[in-house]
Image (cartoon, rainbow, N blue to C red; front, side, top):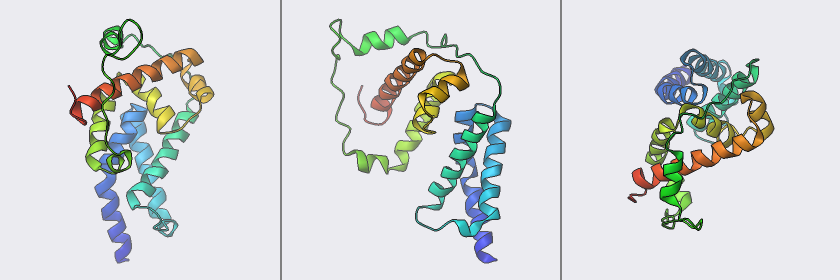
Length: 188
């Protein structure tokens, strides 16, 4: 009984981060809350399913990931992606590349990727960078890179062409690179 109480307390501590992640992807407070609730309920209903091969946070986040995918797949209607909120995209691209297509500045060395990825602060900064992306751009990026949905499925869910999807992903990566360069790797 004590371990179930400890598990409940640990899950409550994770709740705000799980909710932020779900909200970032789903962009709907009710849907995000539902996904988090279903995730926590799944863990509490079968506490013995956690084998301890990863951290509890990784385990719970993995369950949340699938709850979010299930929610996205359950949506019957297609949503048109309006990228009009990407007004300054040309300015961003022009500032990063020369007329001949080469980069103005080579990307800075980001250190050792393995150690960087393990730092909690990196993910906090990455989350802030994602939140600063235009809403629909962030959603497409998260569907592809975090939820690992394939191109066809994302296009079907959002009513995009393959070409449009790749353009949105390219823009998201450019903005994330710029944000991480400024806010994590200290380049100006």
